[in-house]
Amino acid sequence: MDDYWKQRIFSKSLGNIFNLRAKHFDKDIEPVLHTLATAYETFLVEHTKSKENCKKSYIFDNQAIFFLDPNLRTFDATYFDEELRQFRYQVTNLKVSDVMLEDGTALDLDTFCNNTGIRIREAKFRCMRDAVLDAYARYRKTDLFDKTVSDVATSLCRVKKGSRHIRKILSPSRLEFVPHNIIKFAETTECVFNNKESPLINGLWGKSFFDNATRTFLFKLHNNTLGLNARISHFVANQSRTCTFCNLTRNPDPDVDETVLHLFFQCRSTEPIVLGLQSWAINNDQQYQTVSRKNYFGIYGTENTSRNVIMQIVAALIKKYIWDCKTRFAIPDLESGKDFIRYEMDRIISQSGKMYKAYFASDLNFIGDF
Ligand SMILES: [Zn+2]
Image 1: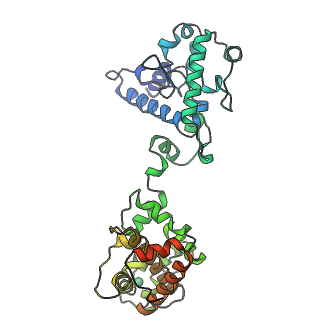
Image 2 (image 1 turned 180 degrees about the horizontal axis):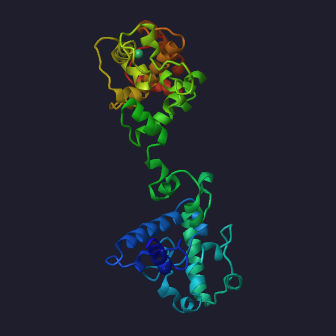
Image 3 (image 1 turned 45 degrees about the vertical axis):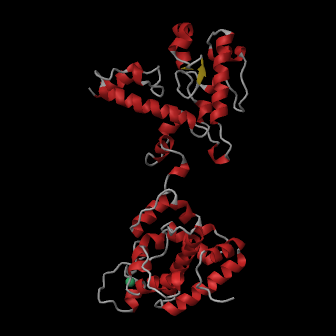
């Protein structure tokens, strides 16, 4: 029973289970196998288009490799007709590398016939070869990162944990997703960040106007590797999980874990400082300003884009200030927080022309007079 479906799959494949097509299965009679084959066929086409896998893709009835006659046609059974009768296995398993060399140049008919054993008319061969070169021109990558090639069997048989490399082929391009570290960071801060916000968060640690210590801190924060007590306690024996500030101030609640959300936002020693510093930066303490967790851990969403940029830097500096307090075992305090931010921001805008302009376009004025 268990082997039956494997036999069905194999018998309907083109002599190679890595070259499966949905139309060979009847949807009503074998719905499960049909669904499997449909999903696989989608994978096959997407695999051809990603990286430079095209170089090693199957040609036979591959939706990604086609010609116009005048409608779009693939190199299917109708196209190969007589060749298929004589050379069924060779034709259905033809690969791009059988008609094109590694460097993208075309093979001639004689070499093709010698290598594959297929006899085919010159015009037919040319049509297929041109379509293959076309497909390669369409899918080839300019980015070095994307220039790797693997055939479909290698991709599927790769001994790698999880299905990420397969999902990568089936899902939209890299830029359209929220990176893994930001998904985790969003979870730990109980926020939601979309694919437009995440590059702004991930871009922060690369800014050269921050000093090295701040950049390292931001990198660890957004990659969820900061040495917080709740994390360290997993690796170090006798390490308390409790918040440093709660310990110092003898918080009557002894079970507060030092997590990102607690230490930087919810701790009774930091919450008034975070809110106070943000109100101060926004309107010089004239009016209390409540700030959302999402603005503080992510980005600001006001209509003034310069203000958003500056406030994201302020929020980063507030977190850095809190972190410095934690490592020095000092309780954060509003006035020294202001001093820290004023000093750092002054240094940043005197170093970066772009930030200088942004600060003045932001209508914020927390640094004071120059
Ligand atoms: Zn605490």
